[in-house]
Length: 353
Image 1 (cartoon, one colour):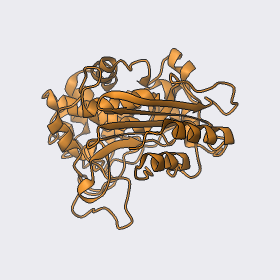
Image 2: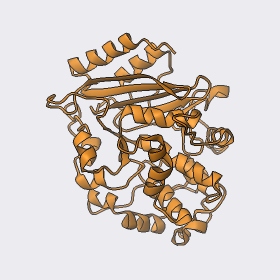
Image 3: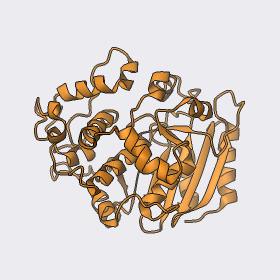
């Protein structure tokens, strides 16, 4: 990987100065140590406040990786079992064709429960008990365990409530206690921001996409302050990269998972009758992580992207952990030209996820 800091900084500055992007951060760790942390641009479309390393960005689905890691830790602790039925932990869930859905099927987005229930208001997304009742009453759209259908938002409650029932603590509390606090990133990585974090959080720039779903969601206090770990994470790139670094190897004295756990979690988990389509797909899931690469190299890199264009991933072969955050919503999503140019400089494959 070519870590040409000046080239990368110029690339970011050119994009934010021209208006192609509003603000962004780029951070890279290797072998447990930070090697690069760059910032550029502004926290909002009015271009009054500059981005710093402490600025937080909405990262949307990037948070699904953290959810997966929490599940894997609980499996290591004997609290969860990949092959257990969700209904074994969450009794009310076992109805309407969901009786035999397994934890591994939910992690690999094969539950058939990818459709968001009907809501009276977007504010209801932040009502944990209500959304869990709706998921418990839901009927799978396809036969569980077969087709991979991305659980864009429903993943929050399918995984999160299973964790709460099994562990006796909310997933939010467990993530703080077992991941964020040990790594020292509790003030700069959150699912549900507080007032101090709100002041540091970049706004979604919707100038190029006025109908932005991302902007509509993060403009609502209920959404930002709720616990919706599949879709409302906020972080800076440094903390996101540090988290991935701790998945690979000891980082500030913390290693989040055993090697054998990561080995299992980064194997493609797809039904024989649901192969990767000829044109390819980004949705190549292991147990909760999206896998990068092709053929024998699939899964050497793993991570997750987000709806606004932020991303985080790790490379098991080289020891690199990478994170990029941004706040302008683009009509070209999931294609982000600046992200692709960064990849070209670093010698990485393009990731449109």
